[in-house]
Image (cartoon, rainbow, N blue to C red; front, side, top):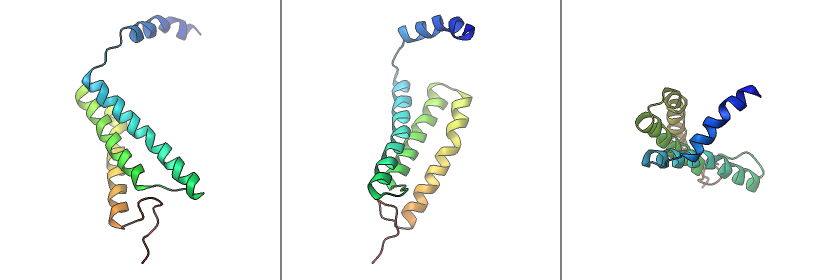
Length: 114
């Protein structure tokens, strides 16, 4: 509890003096995209009653990761943010490439038949 009470005034101060910058908009947009991919995945999993990774999941992953990486490199210059978003960019791009290469069904991720 002492930790919280010691840092509470600085938290309140930061919230009261919040400034929305163009780079924060980039960061928030990346966060929104990267987080929304889980809602897309949840929707399709519930719809098909099995675990599904739709194409939209990978697009949101790539775009969210790229925006977050740009924010942490240029907008904030934060090594923790850079390292935490560097690897997901490549994994997301690879998975998107594999998904598109195999011409999967864009909704369910199943192999196209016919």
